[in-house]
Image (cartoon, rainbow, N blue to C red; front, side, top):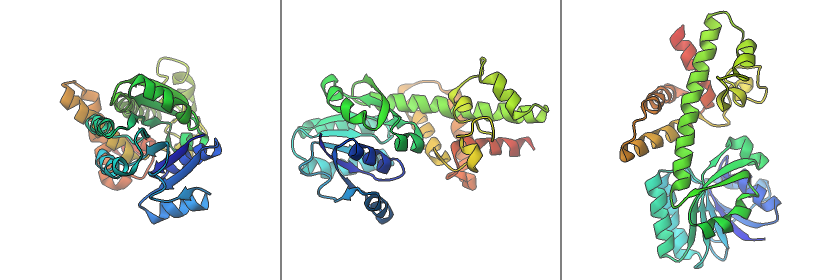
Length: 292
């Protein structure tokens, strides 16, 4: 079992750290927010700023953006022992991820970018999907640790490849949720029940994860946020963040993403109107409002 530092004990980070602890690893966490520290301590996780970076074998970061990751790496690279494996599970821009890799290598550290998919529920259940970027030998070392927090770990390629995969995946997710929402609103206008549309689309060519796992209307999928007042498993503000990352990457790479661009604008309006803390599937309510 490894000694692991875990930095970033928010809605995703804390359950991930606890799953590592349940698997037998010695975990020390850290967060800058007192509420997160209190929640971690109450859950039985040791919290200590110095202990999360010194004399550990692995350091995992789960932070809101690339700027914060690179700021954290300044402390980590100054205090961690050479050869420490650094795993960044934040969702950040590809350029920042590659900068983090380069800085880690220069300091004699191993590094992987390993963003996740699966939301808060997946973090709690230990069923996340990890998209990993980094060298083959680093992936081999990281894989057993990631397996304590997820059920699928995919090596996507070299430095930054994990972030690239996450950005592309979530662009698909944002676009598809808008499409599913529009279809249900149209069905309502045409007098078709939610269940009837679900029964047809979920077993035919309209089938997608946004429909079958996260259906945006109450009823057909009991575990979806639509049955819980759209309390977030994945907040609209986070979807907007990922869509904006996709458009930044598309611009830098010279890729045409017309639907991705339009989805970004739709979610930007939704968040600007005060719905950033709503689950992203709640975009259907914005579609209904426009239809009314």
